[in-house]
Image (cartoon, rainbow, N blue to C red):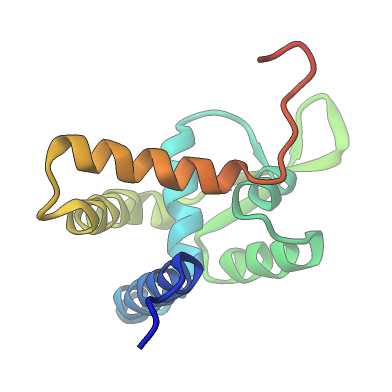
Length: 147
């Protein structure tokens, strides 16, 4: 039987992570993607966040981000407020209910990260992260002025 291609391993790993995240999110009445957005807000701290930031972080189209955010607003997790300085933009903020989920989601994702490198040496874990970073950079051109 031929060896599996690395892409197949990555696809299956991502699928498993998504299944697990959705399973974790279900008791909260949420999806794994909504929990990931909560983690994103938590990691940003007090930095102003807009829909375009969600689009970029999760590599989704505007319509997908819009539906995701709309559902999070309906669940009482996020608010949309007029951005100071530009009334055309809507700033996104976690509600108190969303803020309460940040430490829960953070702890879960840190545990998931630890499971990914369990059994690896520290050097192997660094190499694993480096390999994933290399894959993410495919097709991206360096910014002008950077090396």
